[in-house]
Image (cartoon, rainbow over all chains, first blue to last red):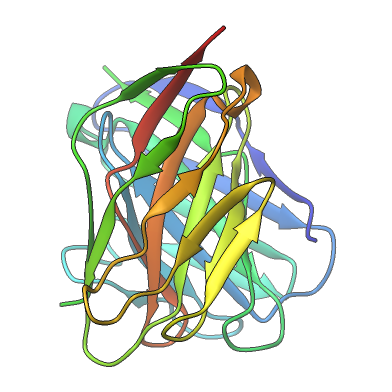
Length: 115
Length: 111
């Protein structure tokens, strides 16, 4: 298994500000992903964080709004920029090790509330 | 695109009752299918998976069979316990290891 930590675990932010969420894994992994879970909704993939290159965003998500970094094989950040109340969600990172179809492990999530 | 549909609404049942949560999928080809569980106050974790048609995934007394004829992957448990109270998500794997999730079902088991 993989042990994943996220910081912060929760935050309350003002409209128009930005928040950076960190995801740290206890061992090297091939793939890292960022998901969003809006209140009462399912998980939606935001992007795949690529080590050493730009993230791959899903339809409806753009780099200007959700810039992502992945400087190495154990760490990634997601920034939620120019926040609005609609960005209030739980943000989760997930990781996958080396093999295709391998299990994805999820972090505990960051609960974000935007006022 | 590829997607997963779960039955609507929470599920409330008594201890030792039989649990079924329906999951159907829409996909090109035959994707790997998963059930994830989120216990209160905990992170999302994999419960079971099936990677090809007719495979049966099982774990902790839960089972699900990959049925391509009905494009379904229903979750079942013969006798639930209070400790099974959680939110259950069905998911499929598509292009380049990405997961598509269903809306999830809250299961509440009453003693």
